[in-house]
Image (cartoon, rainbow, N blue to C red; front, top):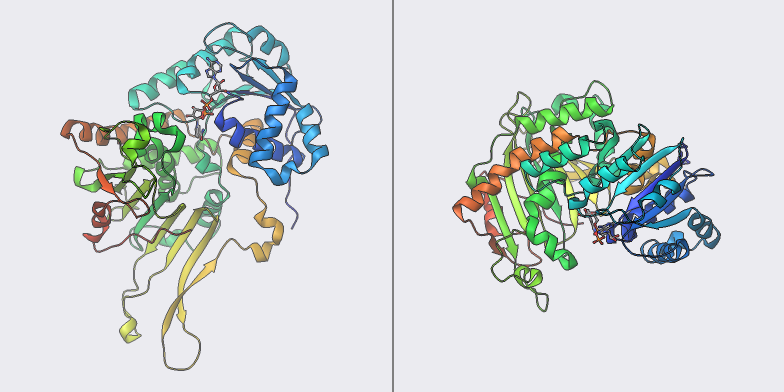
Length: 484
Ligand code: NAD
């Protein structure tokens, strides 16, 4: 199978924060890979814009070093890399002042798609939107890409939406959640809505519960300052895990188009029950050998920010009444592993004696490290010796069936940036979705603050605090093992 590359129209992409960490690690290498795939046409260009003063040659050296470091394999093609770097320029701008804006307006072409990636801290989003407008770059062909975090509560998210809406229409605003750009997440929708097999079973009558785990093995690292003001609830749960829950729980949209999909996701968020205090567990990691504990890492011995959160959620509608959704995410856990598991009910009656009730189908959607979808089915263990049952995985990534190229798909940032250029918002969060998600998480966070709840300590390299295990044990269920 040869992967198909859909051409996109010529574009100018301005990366505000083009010298930052995210630009270096993700955005610029992603653009280079799309260039290699032939998606940057003859004339498309990338313009870095940030505070540092440097010329285009300096920026090209900077980008070359970033690609060398973060995608050494692709960087090996010297001719292609040089040709890509030719497409790059740089303008030093001050988001909050006037420096550089006239020059930037002159650099950005007209009569072509213009995209502006806000890869800067959220406090600058409003200023950037305002200046794009003031300097004549905000026309109907322009679009902005906004990084997370989108607010820190409902009030700040509303304010951000309001400020952006002063200069851009909703169809021009791309709020990025890179989890939605993952190949497997889209495959999940294909599996759900492209087959007759699953949808009839996709409800509380047949699904016992759903687990969503996003586990990281690293600690807060160099992002301690930001992280300590956010915590796992704001940094991961309110956005990434909620989005995954929505895709699992939503009704089939009438079409695979941006508003149809996002309308259905919004209904899920609005159907979520408030979470009772005993259905949420927060945790903070302990030291691990010479690796410091959370508090030491963020430089605040009194910090009560959580590096782990687990909760039980209920989607109160006809489809899901009675089926709990268990969600957990945290740092310094056993492994880096993210998955969604749809755990079906046991068969109502076993004709196989002692195996009765032991087997159940589990549909696993693995997001990282090895993206893929697997369905666990029960079969007879081959060979003589009677009827012994065994669970085996049916691998639905089908790399074998589709050929080796099928594993060579664009990463989330590549796909999402190209969706911005194509003008396809399906995999981006709409303003009302983000607000609804905050409206659900705010009372949880406020409850912690009012009660003075402190996070429970947990061992680095574990599966989180014991209370998180209890969250499921008391329901007679257990978390799946965290393993890649
Ligand atoms: P960073 O601090 O590494 O880079 C910030 C960039 O903004 C720099 O290029 C800097 O020059 C520019 N900048 C700062 N003030 C400016 C001003 N007044 N005018 C013009 N440019 C200015 O930050 P980062 O880690 O790259 O994060 C960027 C955004 O992406 C943030 O919103 C962050 O929350 C989000 N994000 C980052 C990561 C990550 O892994 N780094 C992951 C997800 C989301």
